[in-house]
Image (cartoon, rainbow, N blue to C red; front, side):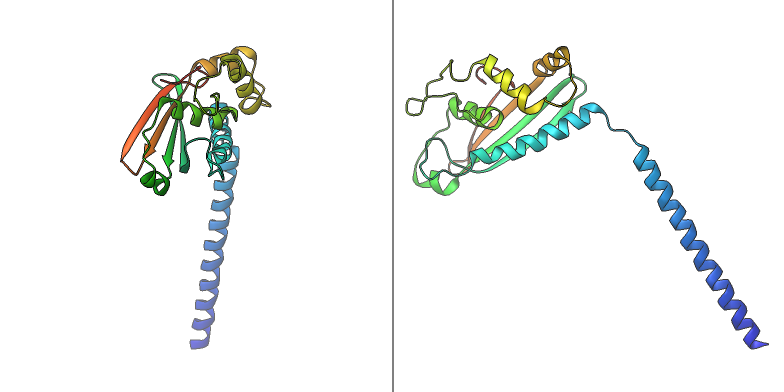
Length: 197
């Protein structure tokens, strides 16, 4: 009699385990199917693609053997869509090399902000090497728009009107931070403005 009770208990236990397993399996399948069927907005896809591309391109601001511009220890990039203002906001935080600028005193300039933006987006400084004067023929707004479309908007099946809309409503804010003297310089503007202010 006791053996029958043990067998019945084992059968019930096995049945309970198999029910739990099958229920969890079907629940997992249902969740996967639900996730698989979700759609991503084209804007989310665009922002993710841009953020990944910008993070990759930020490596152009790495240390140089012979310093021809400000040296940075790290670059942070954030992109968000402001639904209320219907604008895309790109924040770039460029932290200067603390060890270098503790020894060598340096105060950030507006050209530093622009060089950070230009190198990340266009892979060109836009400034002369020694005098740090803006060179209009080297990186004009037309050149910037052309490069931006080729790098960030190609293969996205956007028409010309959509590309212009994006460029008109995409803003960048560059924050150049000097940790040695604890100062910040912020400049902002449209992504393809000749100069950020």
